[in-house]
Amino acid sequence: MWESVGSLAAGPWIYAVVAVSVLLDVFLPVLPSGVLVITAGTAAAAGTGAAGQVAHEVPDILALILSAATASVLGDLVAYRLAWRGGERLDRAIARSRRLTSAQERLGDALARGGGALVVLARFAPAGRSVVSFCAGAAHRRARDFLPWSALAGLSWAAYSVALGYYGAQWLGATWLATGVSVAALFGAGAAAGFLMRPRRGAGNGATGHPEPAAAAHPHPYGE
Image 1 (cartoon, rainbow, N blue to C red):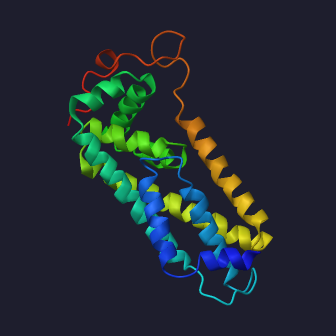
Image 2 (cartoon, rainbow, N blue to C red; image 1 turned 30 degrees about the horizontal axis):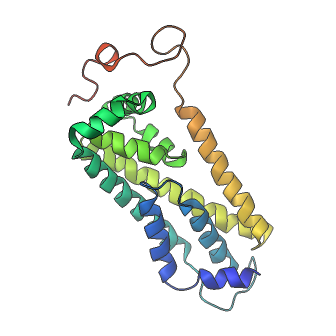
Image 3 (cartoon, helix red, strand yellow; image 1 turned 135 degrees about the vertical axis):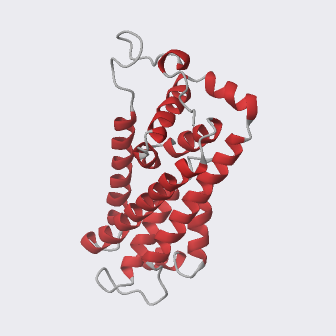
């Protein structure tokens, strides 16, 4: 069974498939790019001899990490630039969403303080990468404030995902069980990141936990 999966992950084209999937999931968060990266990492472990012998070529873990991380940054940059040029229509769309408005304000504050950990956390949270990239562009944050954190986020996510697949196969064998456990660990990290990114109760107006209006809470949240 595993040899059939390994054959699908063989050859240099797997890096292109991983890169395209990761690049596009900033626009289509439903794409299973994380599952694909984990599966490729599991296939890489299958060729080491520790998790089983495979007669054909298997992916290289460093090349997988680099392709996934590079595609992640490129996708963030494309979303960032599109949002930058989105103009008033995108601004109105964000203003209609309390969640997006709150995310935009928090991102602006975090980047202004040089604390881009929010960008890294968002890379693991479901759809968090999309929200952060579009909000950074819509707020006209400087690229030098956003892109270094995007690169760190992409590299962290890619290394974590490949490591899950690789070491899961090392410990559990190159089987569907190893892949399933690794995917569950990736989703667990996403759930934890989403929890950490939630607005704290008591922040904002009264006891509702709703954020204050931008003009009142942060007169110039994105000022240089």
